[in-house]
Image (cartoon, rainbow, N blue to C red; front, side):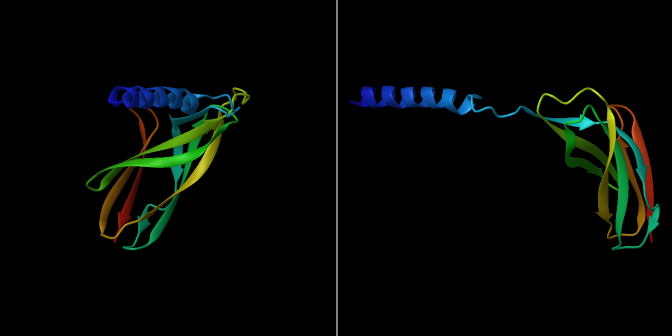
Length: 132
């Protein structure tokens, strides 16, 4: 009886794996990809507690690319920022397009802060903000 229950469980697990991974429902493929940041504009000075909005320009590969999220790595007063875009669908063309997204930051301590927006693996668009 124990052997039968184990085999039944294994069969259910095996079948559910194929049902869960099937794409027969016509769902579109989704890809999230890091994009190249081309420019950053905004204030270079502010006061403690002030919300500062930066306008970040970035390139998407085609018409299906839309903003997904910012990802950040903090190291003291320096922050490295990536932008990721989500691509849904297949009939998107192949024209690279520049888009913009706002990046908001509120700094709670006086000092000089360096924001490094990733342009490529080795290049950055750097934006420095002095907070008093």
